[in-house]
Each structure stands twice: as C-alpha cells, then as structure tokens.
Length: 68
Image (cartoon, rainbow, N blue to C red):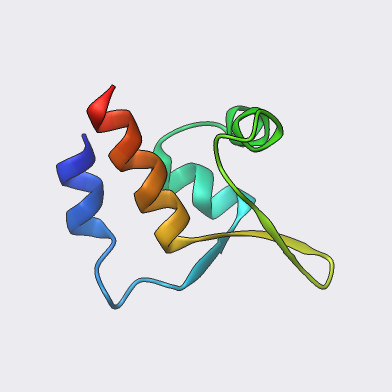
C-alpha cells in the first residue's frame, strides 16, 4: 500500500492537506485520522482555523507503517 501512496504523492501534490483530504490520502476515515492525531502518531498543524497535515508528515507515517 505504501508504494501506491508514494506514487500518488509526488512533488505536484499539495504541501498540506485538510483533515478530510489527508484521511482520503491514507485511505482511512476522518475519525481514524483524528484518533491518530490524538494518539500523537500523526502531527497536525493549525493554519488559522484549519487543521492541516503536511505531505511529509503523511509520508513519514506511511514509512513507519511499512516498517511495522
């Protein structure tokens, strides 16, 4: 699965995703993403009122999952 996501997240991908888009990139629900953020497994950043997750953070998380 990581290889597929890596191919989808190339340099033309956005630098950061809102929660719903980040969840879609990972193939999980927003509730699951929120749980991962709450557990400290994925780092999120606030940009004004929006919660965003960077592309590099998604890639980092996927790489850790591939090792597990």
